[in-house]
Length: 79
Image: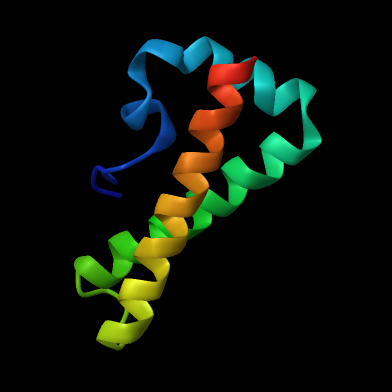
């Protein structure tokens, strides 16, 4: 598969180790990271033309991805 932009490690390159540690130690964080990953992949498939979606669906997915990224960022900042 081609490079998928916006992966968490790409979004937070200076905190890769902390991302990994939180995924292993914090169940809530692991669920957030997994949801982010799934939504990010879906957006990538839509943008690549592999999967069809309405503009509204795409916008909703992007908003949710941003919400998740903000929550991940907050958890990274407080750990």
